[in-house]
Length: 369
Image 1 (tube, rainbow, N blue to C red):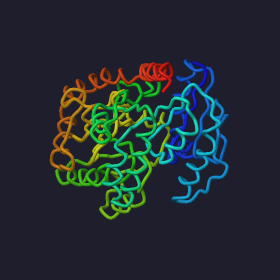
Image 2 (tube, helix red, strand yellow):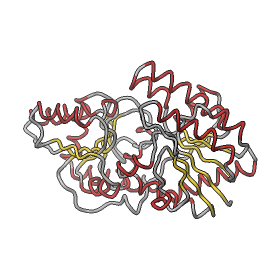
Image 3 (cartoon, rainbow, N blue to C red):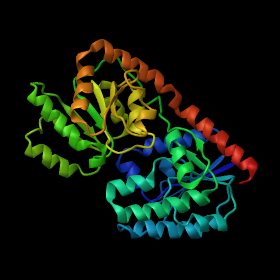
Image 4 (tube, helix red, strand yellow):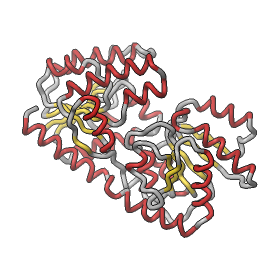
């Protein structure tokens, strides 16, 4: 195959990826694509050109109006005028937020594949309410119905697409770079979380957990990496006099996240609603973390309870404390789960995942659809 064009959604700008320490992940993925495509180009919702940092031609949106809703609107309109002139073997859309997909399809007959990485419609409705949920539902609907080909990350999401839209899809999980996320022998006594710092990720229950451990006479250290409502939660932690135990370190590069994952006693990932195919969780597994996650869609496809991790009921503080306590107090169980975690992450290796994705794309190209 000669050329691949990648299009990212409005919320996945390279300036944000760089700010959140995720730029190396995209560069690593592009490097892997280069094994199969001689030319790669990428379109993103940026005004700055990242061609040099990405190592491939990058097309930023020069007309971008960087305001709350106008950013997404101007970006999608800009794509409307750019896509008719795209020359490629296949166009790879990430995410399901392309409400103008019917027009993209009309203006360019190049085969397309869109990744459906989480239930965007339902998750937005639950997390932000009915207005944003309606917008998300419309965007998702037109994105998946007119993309032509869908690549999803879990069997559960494949079922969502089939039940909601009667669409067939290919399943291929998210990847992990095993060169970055790998285990080590030594561990330290802190607990670790990596992900968005928002209510739906269970941040409130993590704070409650530390307070409850204090009441039991156990003073634990919790480190949280990620962006979101950090100021809000720092205020809560301060009001409860837990600043010396709960540390919000903000977004950090992947290599630093990997260091924390390798060193922590327990990695905790407690979303209260649902996940897609949680990248943080598979990275923690690859790093040899002893993981405790909530029993929600997405997590349950990654964690096999009491084998490569522990599952606690969503929103259940008592159950979460019980599972964390079990790992903290049982060295043999923790070592066993860490070993199984490492083994279970091998199937998510970036080389394996990208190879399968390219095979799927090649079949789409040959079929000409």
